[in-house]
Image (cartoon, rainbow, N blue to C red; front, side, top):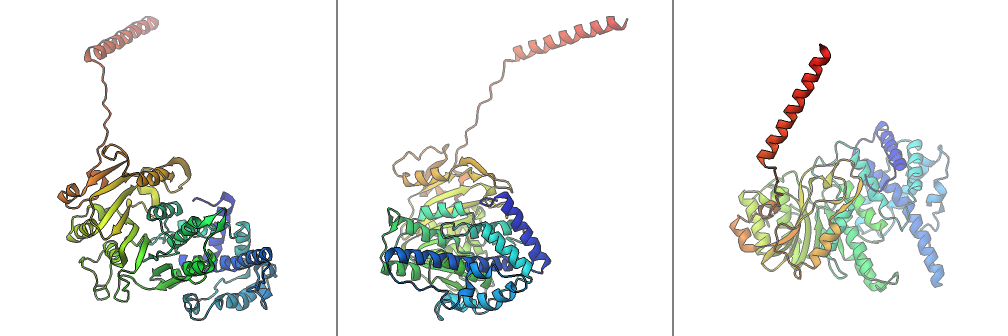
Length: 485
């Protein structure tokens, strides 16, 4: 697991053992409770940071804890074991749940949220772990690291095709799509909202000069309230995604509990950027399935691709992770969705990833598709990723080999570089060739492999060497016979 020191891993594992023994055996419930606690700490961290900024600017500041001083992490985390659990459950959690306007999605999905840590000892240990992580505004990776490590410990993780996308893969896809201020950005199966967080940070970085944001308050309000949209079918994941975005500074995130494959969703032509890693497994009840789909299938990985195509505005772009089977499947549905992506979109890139990228959750082989809606494809850029900076076993330890920087650089320069040699890591394939191969998009169909020529010695030389060996063996036998006599 990346990002957590060995000592902290041990503490999180111990915390999970306590969850299990305390009756919290559902992985999402465990993550949800951890999220609440991290959010409680981040509220004070953020409040303190805003107070410092107000002092520097010489403006008035009103703390969110005004009148609720006992809801500060620094205050209640020092309470004794006989007081802390009741206080957090009945006072602090109630305060956290009621933050923000009443008509926000956060307010809606926090209505039935409950703080369910069963014992004071479990709460105190959780507090200690979070304090050890020093989770402050400048360390945004910590929550994701906790999710990832908790999930890596659980045999039930990924049973519905749900598993967390590694952060560095999210960042690579965000760089490819290059979301900009003014784009409306969506993830149709957002989970913890990792893609939306990455897009937000990407836009903030692009609108910063000398470390200071160049966005006006009006533009920042638009960025916070009318830019990021996520959907998930699990109410718990919706709450986690909402808190994740709020902890990263988005004041009014739009995360909804909606099955985007169902009749209840219709956002056709709405979004400028889609970033996603939708569930690979499972199927949908035909009676619930949206009437918008033209591809006749129950396979969610194919339906999500058409959903994303439908949801994009003309000129909109999408980076999505798909299982390899989508690239070469022979069914009418498989061929139909590939034909759609190639004829109705400009399929800019197919990046084949090694099978270990999603370990320890799954060993499935995957690829990233990047496409732009509204113009046909002339040629497709393929890249054969062989390393992503981490070992491809269950441990996923950091290594030097990493193709991601080259992927991003080569993609930017693809039109100005020689991409004709199919023995290289990256190359173009014209649309006519793909069409003649039943719209097959698998890298192996087009990549030329380099076979090293084996150089063998001449038979006469080998026979002479064999003869010499036999002669030496014969001499050794004669010596042994004389010794025995």
